[in-house]
Length: 176
Image (cartoon, rainbow, N blue to C red; front, side):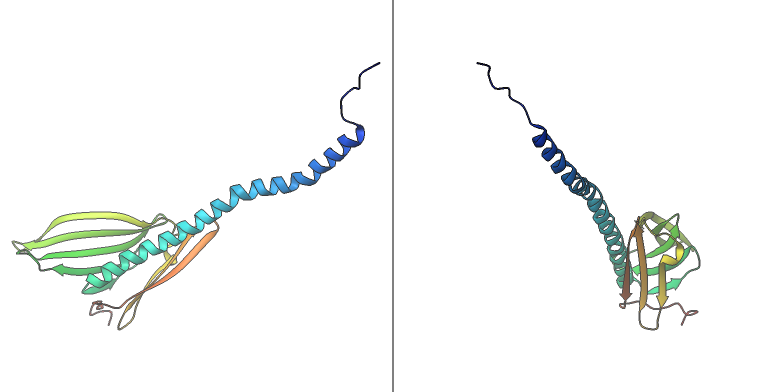
């Protein structure tokens, strides 16, 4: 007596092949989405983070500043305030400008000594890296507040934020 041979029949192989053909597009789509969706969400989060970071800096500088002087391309403007807490009065200037797709904040601290300004420190930071063009940031001066519009773009994701700074801001005399 011969033993039974084990194996698959032609019908079983055809059924398995049809199942694989039906499932492959679903598996491919799931694999594609698992790679692209996190990247898109990451780009959106980056754009949101950029606009919030700009908002934090502008709000802080606006609350401290005694005046804001609008600038011209590539400089948006300069916040100016003084610190009278110690023996020496320090003057702070926070300049905002656009440079190579970045919004740059440059802070200079100086004091007056012997009829001349002495620079104590200077620091520069890119507070937003995904500003495509100069016009994606706008500083608009009104009589009682400063409004800043920021548009951050990361790949195909963009976010726009409007910041209104109302405390302590006064326009320079030429701008009123």
